[in-house]
Image 1: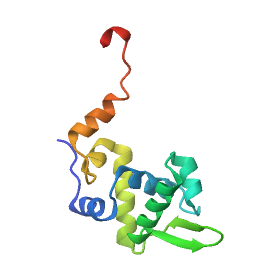
Image 2: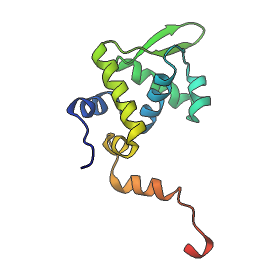
Image 3: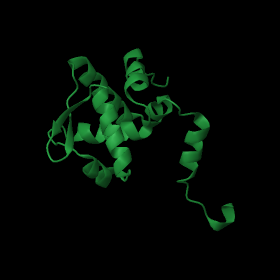
Image 4: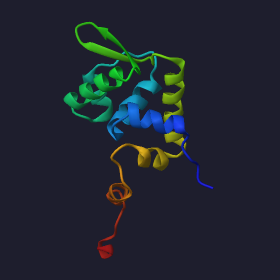
Amino acid sequence: MPEQLSPQVMAFMTTRLRSGEALQVLMLLVQSPERWWDAAAVRRETGLSQGVAGRLLHQLASANLLDIRVTGDVRYQFAPGTPELRAEALAVCDLYFRTPWLIVSALPGVNRRSLADFADAFRIRRDDDR
């Protein structure tokens, strides 16, 4: 029987994450919980543009998932506002590592066709497969 997402995980994903890129940034910060990140550092690690990285950091901070420190730049650190939010964020990241298809397919705005197209882009084809 395939694994199902709990109602708590589904609620977290639909209210706190709006895209695969947001999940990518959240996972980056979860993996380095002591580090403070700015948009330029997230850009270097993810390949997202600095503007998108900054927007996603702001979005995650607005979702009460990140602490903010203002220095020369605005920096962010994974620090959910409640123990429940921390548990939900860690559960989503853990599930992604175990079953990425399940998590990605549950993100808002993702449909099976777009996932199949994405996966097909990475298929290795021989010349005679065309």
